[in-house]
Amino acid sequence: GQNIDQPTEMTATEGAIVQINCTYQTSGFNGLFWYQQHAGEAPTFLSYNVLDGLEEKGRFSSFLSRSKGYSYLLLKELQMKDSASYLCAVRDSNYQLIWGAGTKLIIKP
Amino acid sequence: GAVVSQHPSRVICKSGTSVKIECRSLDFQATTMFWYRQFPKQSLMLMATSNEGSKATYEQGVEKDKFLINHASLTLSTLTVTSAHPEDSSFYICSAFGLAGHTGELFFGEGSRLTVL
Image 1: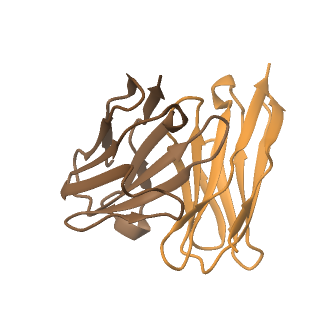
Image 2: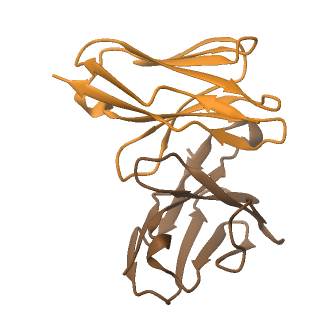
């Protein structure tokens, strides 16, 4: 079966750095997405990786290793507004999006 | 960037009534749109893939006759929850790939929170 694993919840301190991991087992691979979702709102796009390596976008970076079925989202200089759920999703060989359950990130002052 | 708009954002209805939710791509044509449902503290669950000009493809366990999807134009897809019951109360979200298609990001509507009394 297809599966995406990410931690249920993480806690970090304002101003610090946090890494949210995502491992996947899917039928084929056509890209990995990270989305941010604040409570009660729709997800918003953060990053897209299809090749191995690190993609940096401001305070957020996303890494992919296709051979390991692994990705992480790195958030730097954490701000209180970064408190949200972070969803990892993989597009399989049929271009279907397989979603992880999301990681709830709690930022403490 | 591409924009997807969803309406209404909130709706409260009585049990047994039907509710229609609209999803529009505002600045691009979307031949395919996706409808998701999300229960509190859970991840997105794909309900169906809406294809312009043809029947929607429903995920296993989703009742076609209860969740009617119409994708009559390249910019509009609608989801109608028929004979709604309290267990249908949920957050419904539509999405579509942007101009870059399969290589691009998935844009989401604002979501519609349905409460069935």
